[in-house]
Image (cartoon, rainbow, N blue to C red; front, side, top):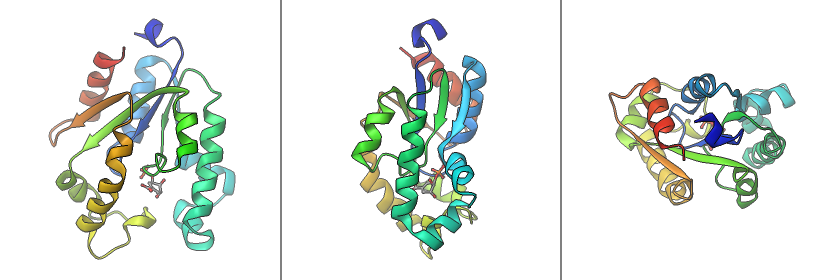
Amino acid sequence: MQQLLQGVNVFLVGMMGTGKTTVGQNLAQRLNYRFFDSDVLVEKVTGQTINDIFATQGEETFRQLETQVLSELASCTKSVIATGGGSVLKPKNWSYLHHGLIVWLDVSLPILTQRLAKDTTRPLLQTTDLSLKLQSLSEQRNPLYAQSDLRIIIDREQTADDTVEQILELIP
Ligand code: S3P
């Protein structure tokens, strides 16, 4: 498996709540890769939480920081990278994502709505109608996620370990 990947990075993309961080950590362990989370790196660079960045500087500033972090990660090797759910929005980000194998974690809206019902960490989800918001975000983003190299459909019962196995089986 590792020989086939030959040190190429794996970028996990997908909506908020799809488990990119947990799956990414487990996958990195299995591949003997390093693990990075682009949101965590944005927070480290700025010394602010994602919520604070959105509140004080706005979404566009966050998107620029996200692009900066992705550009730096693109030059890594042997890394699994959990990206923020909106990383697919900027065409420029794709030039960085294409430095690795892009894996879309695809979770259905009812499961996402259930998982994110009590979330307070994601500024885009501070809304009175979570399911409508997730629906509109996924309608906008699914055609972009669909440009990934691999699509992993995750069902309700599935654990992060199951997802890692699925990815490992599909890695070309
Ligand atoms: C966002 C997803 C978040 C984070 C920010 C914006 C999005 O990351 O980058 O809140 O636009 O979908 P996760 O997908 O890791 O929750």
